[in-house]
Amino acid sequence: MDAKALYAERLMTAEAAARLVRSGAKAAMGLGVSQPPALLAALAARAERGEVEDVNLYYLLSTAIAGETVLRYELMDRIRPWSLFHSAVERRLEQRAAEEGRPNPVQFIPTGFQQSPRVLCDEVGVDTLICTVSPIDEDGYFSFGTNTDYAKPVSETARTLLLEVNPHMPRVFGDCTVHVSRVTAVVENAAPLLEIPKAQPQPADRAIGEIIAGLVEDGATLQMGIGALPNAVCDALRDHRDLGVHTEMLTPGLVELMQAGVANHASKTLHPGVGVFAFSMGDRNTYGFLDGNRAMEARPVSYVNDPAVIARNARMVSVNATLQIDLSGACCSEYLNGRQFTAAGGQLDFVRGAYASEGGRSIIACHSTAAKGAASRIVARLDGPVTTPRNDTHIVVTEHGWANLKGLSTSQRARALIALADPAFREGLERDARDQGLI
Image (cartoon, rainbow, N blue to C red):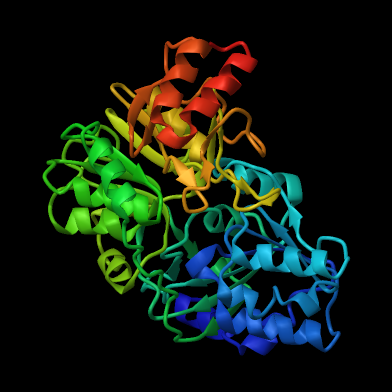
């Protein structure tokens, strides 16, 4: 059968496709923008009617699309969330359960982003993929668009593939497609893509952005996260030249650098002339930039975030945020107020890959304080798990300056980090350092 015939054979309503999710299924849901509203609403409706139960849903970074459908609190006894990266959706579910004295309804799986495809395919044995894709091309392929990440690897092993075709999903090039012959069900739904408003940098973000920009050489290859601080870094890089992009997450700030000609990938030593990413979240301009753009390639996160692959980019610079740094340089970037807040994501992947790169730099950035100045982010001991071990931390930046921790003793590290803390907390941190025998 040709591609058109296969497509027609698999085309059905969202309700019919949702009936293909069996009780006891291990289903992977697309990350972020690729969470399909029609399919998830239909699956939630089935669960609400008691037609399916014990559905195990695996995913990273849920959005309101999932939060208003399959991740509704009242469905938790029939659809069980297995989160590899928390968002506000999971935090609300956990908070409500705690208030009602019920067990936590969300199962959290600690893992690095680069390992997530293997975890889902080999360790968990996911049997179903539910996600959004771009329209089929003339050769019978769908593009995963904004989200190749773990969707592409799961599509190669799962038995059941339920795809929601959205004409607004950009067609992206790279290792990011699935053929219609692999697909179980196709649902058409022209829904606007989720957009993330660009966070506006504050004065501390601007200060940190300027410091980091001073650490980036012309011709460097960049990895950035999302938020006001990375936006400030991108803004401060506008006078640089010949930058490249190799990043797990493609953000509006990076897209604007490419549109301005600042990032043209000309000096890249891996995939020269091409920007590489695993997933994207942004605005309409971001998605429009990706659509049909052969200067961008999406690849599975098992490749993009592999430290050995990252290190093949000369002068690789990774910029990641953290929530706390202890006096030895260990970072907790995922735990807040006594509970899981996000997850490790790809931070350690890029910390290690960037430092292994020839001339590379791994940068951990944060404001010196939290809670409107009431708490220091530089602390004597972390309040949660270690995301980036002290052995791996390279450069730390706050609005008060920067320090290269590599080659420093624990005593030298403590003094360097205290100097980066807010002045109001330095005396107390010095006492803590003495108590620990660091100074």
